[in-house]
Length: 87
Image (cartoon, rainbow, N blue to C red; front, side, top):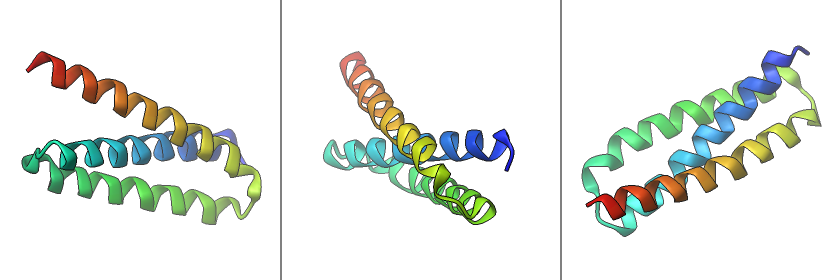
């Protein structure tokens, strides 16, 4: 299993959780226009994570997926806070 599987799983997980956290903040703050595009992007990232898991057939993806998820959530919280302050 090559490095690209780990990197893709990490980045897809980071993007997926970033979008999930951002989506939750959009719902809380009533930003309806972003709900559909964010949902579509979340679905694409989720499928990509599952594809990487199926390709690797290994538990070794737990760490990069978990780390990517945590970083994605923190990034979404920071970005959403910055966007809200600018308005």
